[in-house]
Image 1 (tube, rainbow, N blue to C red):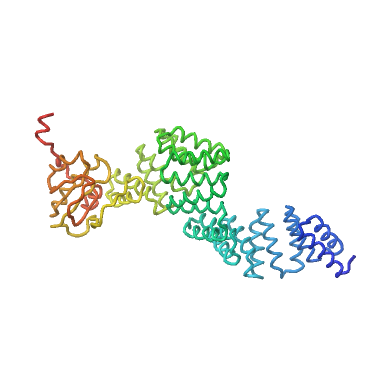
Image 2 (cartoon, rainbow, N blue to C red; image 1 turned 120 degrees about the vertical axis):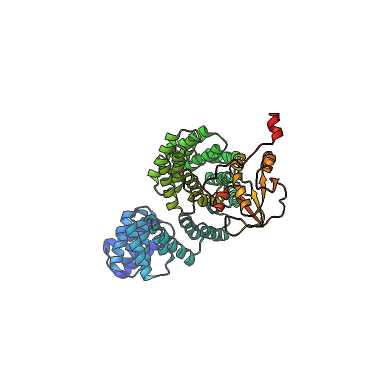
Amino acid sequence: MSDPAALQALCQQGLAHHQAGRLAEAAAAYEQVLAADPAQFDALRLLGVQRIQTGRLDEAVDLLRRAVAVRADAPDVFGNLANALNSLHRFDEALEAADRALALNPNFAEAHGNRAQALRRLGRLAEAADSFGRTAALSPSPQAHANHAVILRELARHAEALDALDRTLALRPDYAEAWIDRSDALRALDRPLEALASADRALALKPTAAEAHGARGNALSDLKREDDALEAYALAIALKPDYVEAHNNRAAPLSRLGRPMEALAAADQALALRPDYAEARLNRGAALYDMRRMDEALESYDQAIALKPDYPEAHNNRGVVLYETRRLPEAMASYDRALALRPDFADAHHNQAICRLALGDPAGWAQYEWRWRTDQIAKRDWGAAPLWLGEGDIAGRTILVRDEQGLGDVLQFCRYARGLADRGARVILEVQPPLKRLMARQGGVSEVIVQGELPPPHDLQAPFMSLPLALGAMQPDGAPYLTADPDDVAAW
C-alpha cells in the first residue's frame, strides 16, 4: 500500500488508538505506514511520541530527527525532540531543539519548559529561571509555577520563589509538595513560624509524607524547639529510613542540647547514606568542635570544602577552629574566603573581627559591629535614643552605656566610660545587678542602673563593647580604673 491517502487514513487510525491509550495498536499502525513510506511525516512524528511514552528514547530521537528532516517547520516536533533528549541527559542537544521550536513559535509553553530543564541541568540557572517564568506565564498551571519556584530557590531568590509557590497553591490548594517547598522558602526568609504553619498544612494533606515531617522538623529547629524538632525528624526517618537530610538535620538540635556524641552519630549516619554530603561533613565538624577534637573538626571542614568549594559556612567554621588553635593568619584567610563567597555573612564578620583584634588590628572594632546581626548576641529593644559610635560632640549630653553580654565584658569595657566623661558627657551605666555597687565607684560615672530598670532621660546610648570604636582607642591606658569598697576590703 503506497497510496498517500490510504497511508494517511491508516495513520489516523493509529492516532485514534493513540488517543484512546492503546499504544501498542497505535505503534503497529504507524510502523505499517512507515514500512510503505519511510518519510511519511505524521507517522514519524506520532511514532516518535509513542516511543517517548513507552520509554524507548533513543528510537524516539531517531524518529523525530527523521521527521524534522522531512519538515523543518513543525515546532511541536522540535519540542518533542527536546523532551526526549532531556530524558536522555543530552542537554546541549535538547537546548538546541527547544530553541528551534521557539524560533518557529515563540509562545510555545512546552518548549520554554524543555529549554528551562536543559538550561538547569547545564548549570545556567538564571537563564533557566527566565524560561521557567515564561512557561508559567504562557501556561499558568500549578506544576509550571512549582517548577519556577524550585529554580528560584536554587538561585536564592526566596521571595520570588514564595510568590511562585503562592500562585501554585492558589490554583491547587491541596498540593502537599508545594506546601513543603513553601515551608522551605519561608525558612530561608527567616520566617520560621510561617514555615511551621506551611509544613503543618502539608501534613494535614499528606500525613505519611516524610518530607513534610522533615520540613516541620526544620522549622522547629529554627525556632529552637529542639525536642519537638527531634520528634519530627524521628517520624520522618520512621517513614523513610534512608532520608539522609533528616538524619543530618538532627545534628543541629542535638548540638544545641549539649549532646555532641549523638550529633556526631547523626552526621555519620547521613554520611553512611551519602558519603559526598558536604552538609553532613559540616555538621560532623561542628560536633567534633563541641567535643574539642580540633584536628578532626578541621579535617571534616576541609572535607566539606573539598566537596563544595563555594561553601561559606565551612570556610567560616574552619576559621573558628584555626582561631581556637591560635593559627590566626590562617583563620583570617578562611574568613576572607567565607566573606568573598557571601559578603553579608554576619557570623564570619563577627568571628573575623575577634581574630583581627587578637592580631592587634584596630579595624576589628568597626567589623565587630556585625555582632548585632548574628544569633550569638542577644538583641534587645533599647528604645529610641540615637546610637553613638563616635560621631559628633557629646559635651553636655547624657549618654547611657548599656550592658550587652556577660559580667566579664562589663568589667573589661567599663574602663572606657572615663573617656566619655573626659569629653564632657554625663555618663550613666546600665549593668547586671551584682556589679551595681562596684560600678558606682568608677571615676567619671554619674549614675548606675540595673538592667531592666527604666532608664533615666538620656540623649545618646552606646553598648559597652562599642566604646573602643567610638573613642578610637585600641587599648586602654593601663591606669587602674576600679576600686573595691574599703569596708568590704576590711571585712574580707
